[in-house]
Amino acid sequence: MIETRNLLVRFGPVAAVCGLSLRAEAGGWTALIGPNGAGKTSALRALAGLAPYEGDVLIDGRDARRLGRRAVARLVAFVPQKPETPPALTVAEYVLLGRTPHIRYLGGEGRHDREAAAQALLRLELERFAERPLGSLSGGELQRAVLARALAQEAPVLLLDEPTTALDLGRQQLVLELVDTLRRDGLTVVTTMHDLTLAGQYAERLILLDEGSVVAEGTAAEVLSAPNVAEYYGANVRVVEDQGGVFVLPVRR
Amino acid sequence: MPTPRVEARGVGLRAGLVAVAFLVVSLAIGLAVGPVHIGVGAILRSALSYVPFLHVNQPLGAVDHAVLWQLRAPRVALAALVGGMLAVAGASYQGVFRNPLCDPYLLGVAGGAGLGATLAIIYASAAATGSTWTVPLAAFAGAIAAVVVTYALGRSVGATYMTGALILAGVTMATFTAAVQTFVQQQHTQQLQNVYSWLLGGFSTATWHDVAICAPYVAVSSLALVLHRRVLDVLSLGDDEAASLGIDVGRARLTIVVAATLGTAAAVSVSGLIAFVGIIVPHTIRLLMSTSYRAVVPLSLIAGAGFLVLADVVARTVLSPAELPIGVVTAFLGAPFFAIVLRTSRGAR
Picture: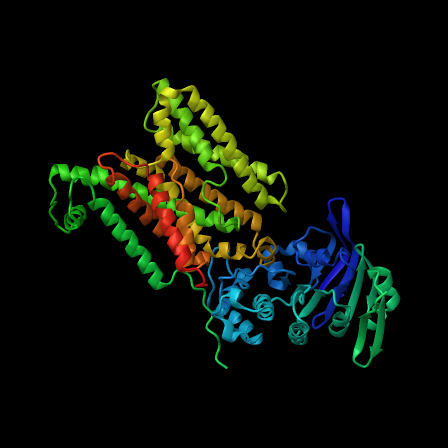
């Protein structure tokens, strides 16, 4: 479980996030949505302890500031929008780096670390790729390797910044389904998302940010209304709702 | 379903043996080759005669013994220490700044050492107060001072842009110290020869005394860098991801930079400026073996030592009895060798 109270993230004099309060439960998926520059990524970085913030971030009820960097890394795994994937590193070596918060500063991996990394590879069906260099993987395979590294961290909270950027439609669904399986196993998932339809399909709770502030919050049906999308994205859309969920379809102006 | 084998490659037995064999052969060549011929067997027996309880007789006459242990051995030892240090520092700088073109002189070590040595050669010897310590000490102090200023300058822009700013600050510092050094040198043309031969680098005057000055720094620095090999792999994921894995990126970077700089400054102070070792040795290992720092850092240390010993053999034999500056040799041999490695391994990864 991860919670923020009155989160404020500044970029110099500008507040990128202003007074965000959210509560993401274990086994839940919360999506931060909003136009470019709304503060989604800044909020996620603050949750991961990567950006200085005011207000509180509580992980399992404990103040993140008091936990220290390593302890936070054992509780929160963060996948940036464009992860660095050194092309010559093998998938296995890359996933093993996810064990860093569990290893002493100058130490090496033990048997348990190798087992945890192997489990992460199995979980994301990457066992055939273990010895392959990252540079030889396709976009979808690479995103799975990145998820496996985050999974090897064995952290109960998973933060994903735009997990489906640069993937085709099929790979987007594949990756999001994988994340959903991890969520059902009890992970707390918080993502930022650009695709509103996909956000509505996977996240049970959406938080719409604009200029750093929360402007709408709730289920897909509550947040993804045509007026909301028109007002905050400046986009002309038709919103279709049926048993399959909420679909946000762009319509030419 | 079988569990996949998950292993970090590290150095590996074969690569480790090849590297150690290369170093041993290089050391043997370094000790055996020279105007006075001394066989490898005699060198080995002479070395063993110093081991207590083995009762091996000293096979060498007084002259050969002095040539071997007072001229060649300190020279070979110093070349090995300096070569290993420059290569391991280069590999570490490349990792910490995530830039393959970084060399150990990046943060102004070379310029600072050059200026320090020039000042010492001109003013200390002019005042006739120079001892064997003066030039190395001045070079060391100059190198450290230059890096401290570079670091302070790079830091002043804040953490976000620090990596790029540090490299720019290093370039600024190198240009500035080179300008001052050239100015001072031109004011004292009678010392030009001495200054120039120091700047070009070499081991022609190596003594056990130099080895003793340099060895503790090289030992501590290279140990610290070898211990950081996994941290360097984590840093290769970028600052954000390394921090999200629980690494204090600023502190890790500072520790690695301090270790690499101290070792490099000590190496430079006893050998002058030897170009190229810190770039070609780590990259050759990356191209031939592995890009993981768990392999690159320890193998650079061993291969760098062997490489510079061999380069020194070439420097002192090609125009014997005259000597080539070793920097000329490292560049002349290193550049084509590296070009071959680059070409043959292209597409292999």
